[in-house]
Length: 74
Image (tube, rainbow, N blue to C red):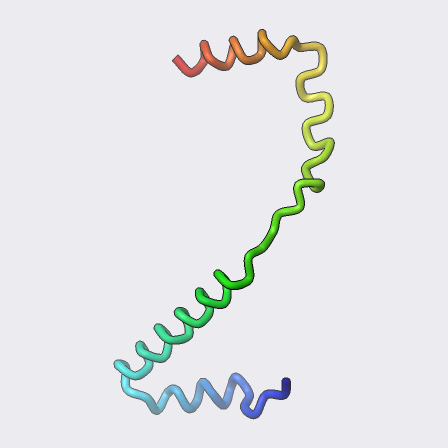
């Protein structure tokens, strides 16, 4: 998709708009970007977390770890 106008040209054109018109343009752009962002749901690759905590609890009993965490929260 080829652009007809450069960003610089568009910015110069917007300077000729009133403040109210500029605000309306910004709101429209934000709305469009949010709508597009919602349509493009990004899925998370859980495989990236694989091995991240390796060795973190090495030598510690899982139940003792949980019990200690619960005590610390009180």
